[in-house]
Length: 71
Image 1 (cartoon, rainbow, N blue to C red):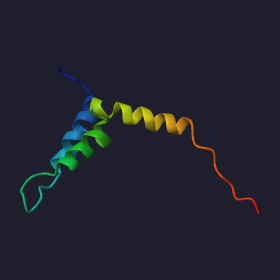
Image 2 (spheres, one colour):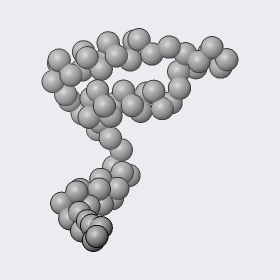
Image 3 (cartoon, one colour):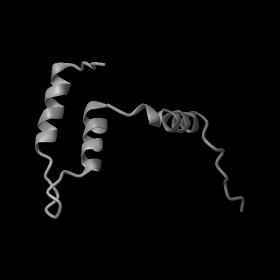
Image 4 (cartoon, rainbow, N blue to C red):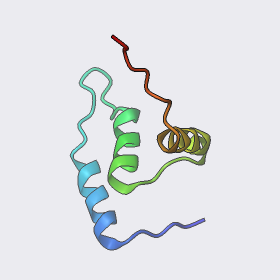
């Protein structure tokens, strides 16, 4: 299934990925760097994180009551 993003976002992602440096020991680009680039630069995320995102959103909308010191 194809996914299309706007040309500016696409080109920004390509540019960002082109600057990733391989690990000197392994010669490979670290997987976490690619994941970060996809998520932070292109806002592309795996479906598997949806429950975590929903939980985080719920906690932001329903913060725990603050406990204050009584002196």
